[in-house]
Amino acid sequence: MSNQVLLRLPDDLATRFAQLVAPRQRGRFLLDLLRRELERESSELKEAAKHLTEIEAGNPVLAAEAGEWLESPLAADADDGFDAAVFESQYREAQALHEPRKARTEEGA
Image (cartoon, rainbow, N blue to C red; front, top):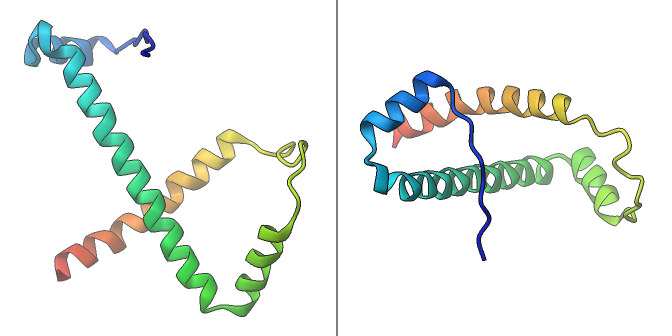
């Protein structure tokens, strides 16, 4: 099963895309790009979770808080206060903090 998606591109990006990718290769190009980026995002989230677990394991207060969170029951209204814009902003800030550490780690490798 597949879904069709309408994608609007800014003029400059659409022009570059049309110039650099042959018409019969554009669908495959976008699929490959999307798969690669989703895998990268997934890998980064896994690394972040691993790093957070390591931090929590070394801090009893955080470990206790994580344990309470894991043991709490799920409720339908649990996300009533969730703000996607705030989450995205905080995520970008965390990513920006992670990038210099990642670069230092790669330089030392």
